[in-house]
Image 1: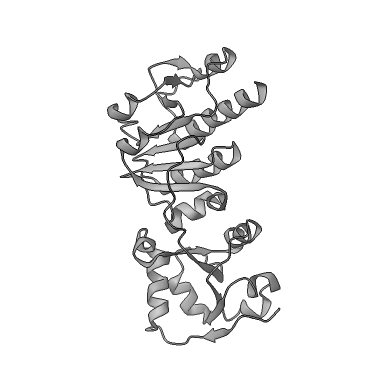
Image 2: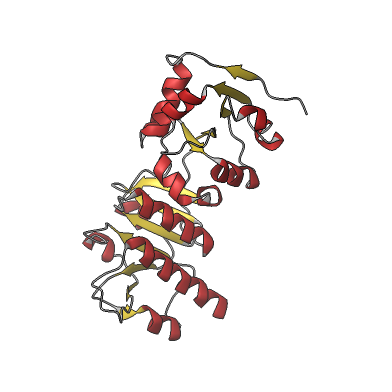
Length: 264
């Protein structure tokens, strides 16, 4: 196999590096550039395992001689920069010394019959990434991000997703009119309304496939989205807490749904 070309960049004012800095540090820059940045071994390796090819590999000078062959040959082009410049670009406290630039997938079309997770203005990037991980683990392959939700391909969501992005069908910037097109039942979590999740599981009330709706960290699911729900569900909390973190609630609900499918 012919090795991809390697370019050494030494100027901080290089146009590519300026764009890369924006991708690494600006949560929505990927929308303007049509590309996104994934930094570090775990994310990059997860992409390659899924057969996702990067457009450009970027390496620090100290790491480049040590780069595994599968990394060096993965991208169409490789760029090497000084360690100082890589640290300046990186959005991490401890920069990983390598990363890939990927072309942003073309806008996915909403799949109306796919098991899904609806994110209604979930704003914390860590929560969104964690929910994506749970969705991938429990077989919910479509993520529907309504307007106001954290940018799905932002660096922080990518890092907290830990590679889950590569196996999911991601659709963002949608509204309630789009959600209304779903042909699977919508389930809404609530702290005070509806059946308890464990009882719904025991009584075989959890439909499959379905779409779980998860709401804003403080305000929850909007009343308009609740109106579209087939079922409202509460999570029993015998310890007495008022509510659960949305990512924790998502993991519990999605696991229950997966269990219902396995037991059917």
